[in-house]
Length: 257
Length: 290
Image (tube, rainbow over all chains, first blue to last red; front, side, top):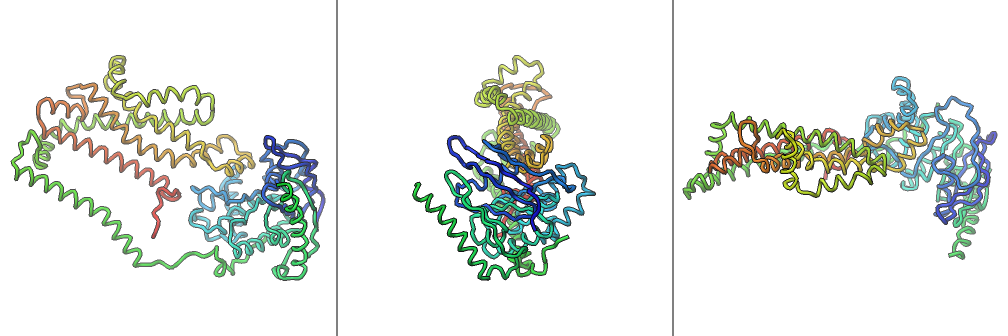
């Protein structure tokens, strides 16, 4: 299922003033993997993601992203914790933005924007404005915008944290389907053990102060995940295993403070 | 290509398209809209009638408080000269507002782009703003040959500052995640300005425009008062001073009425522009159903 290394982090560190947010993080992410960064607040998981996206300079180390093989205008798609939509622009124009910034004309872009909207189930809402949409729908627009450039890598920073449980489950299912259909490599940041176990092929457990990798746990359950997996014994066992690892990091944290 | 099933849309809470149209609700909204016009107009008519009645009943002399009918009569009689003055004030006000917009936006953009430029020039802008225009006007009138240009400068000084400050704040108010997104997609400075910074600044700019519209008129009137010019090519403020010297109180009221009317037109115009630009997306212009 997974291919050659696509993102390689080599002893990546990040300081904010005197605070060490990420310490010597080394990790190889392979093509087609669905990786989750899981950990408590302040463990540097969002910082690591932003460094991969090139949105934050590194204090030390290197991040290598393999050269693109596809015709993607942009290799990375990024989904923020908030939908981060332009309130003055329609759903269509929000999704069109990455193509517009790549100087792709409306004629060429329109079918692709429509296709991205169809994929996230928002065909009928192309002309709507963000304020007219629910939280889940806004997040779908954000995902469509990230996918419209046909990226190889999708980076997601706790995208469903603010959503209710029902919407979150639905979006998790949709995300599994999208990433499988597009053969995406996904790096997903979350607080939720259940979300990480359901979504990922590998969970990277991180601890705080300083942010560091504690456990790199592959999950063996068949991919793409089916809804039944949520209620399976395997899911509960994996969730317990990851929870125990995470609890270990929290214990260390508690002793420190 | 992949597709997320849309058959579950009816069961998906975030795909709900909303409740059916409630006609009772629409009727109530329409009635409220009508009332918002009818009520103030009715009250205004009652106030004018009461004014007319009290002046007539108490036999108030016209050099103290003229009746509304006399003011209307004066308006008709002196229509040509009052309209010429109105046109002068309109030109002065709108020209100073236009220059305030151009100057405020350009300087604001420069401030937003360069911190050193802002730090160097902002104190000058503040000095211009905090010094009362009535105190600067006599000097400007001495240094500038053309009276119209001098008045224009005075009105511009008053209207310029809100546009400048709000443009600076607006251009810096773009969402930081959207800034990151634009950086990630390698947007050019022009693309960032056009698709992110300018739309983000619009609500701030529109708020400034409403304030500056009123201030331009105040600036124009105050400058004219200070200039105290008389003659054919003068504005409504000069008509007021002139009428006051001649104790032509009905004429004074007529000119005052026109100044107020101009102020109202400016307010309505700037509100309309703001609604046209922001109405479809910004909280300040969206009417919520309760």
